[in-house]
Image (cartoon, rainbow, N blue to C red; front, top):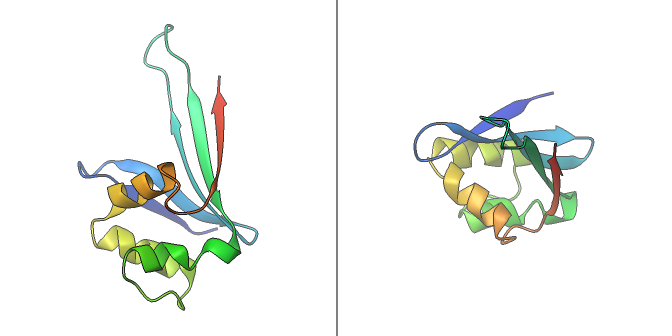
Amino acid sequence: MAQIAITGKDGKAILYASMHGEHLRFEFEYYSRSSNESDYEFMHTVFPVDFPGIPEKFGLDSTVDILVSIQEIQDKGLGQELKDALTDNEIVNELFVWRG
């Protein structure tokens, strides 16, 4: 399965995008730095009906494969903007958060 690392303004990975069946998933795990903190993972799942909204938000062609669009967004240095749009639900998605 192809996975695309989405980086923030500091160049560090902030999301990983991949296909899970017909759904597009963006995920990331944070690991605790001490016993006072918890690990947590979040996943934004985008359903096929909502795929066109992603490239359209960034002024890209919505008829190309969605992972091609995600890679283009990353290549343009817009990873943080993509993450923010998912978090703010500007791109329709379902959010799952696990905390351990």
